[in-house]
Image 1: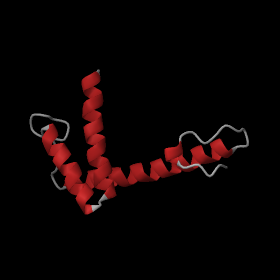
Image 2: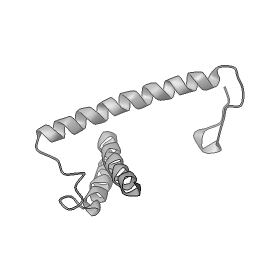
Image 3: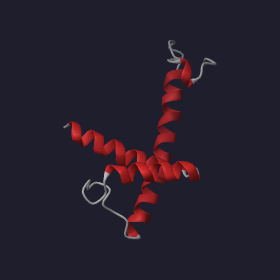
Image 4: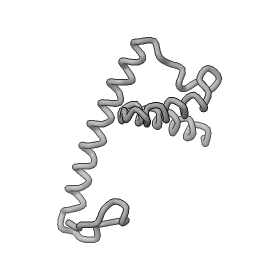
Length: 95
């Protein structure tokens, strides 16, 4: 495996199995993070939070403010959840 970092660009050009191993580790990381995101979202829904997908009830500005508020707190799961909500809205507007 190379010593290159993500910021250095693609690091795999060999067929030694390093790419498969890296892909597996990335998959586990994303799966675990997604579970944590879902748990937090479910908890907030049970507390009565909702409307993220309705731009009239919850404007884009509110999503962005929530994202930045959680960045300041360093709450990585909430940061990811707000980022996902913003991303989802942008994707659905493209279709």
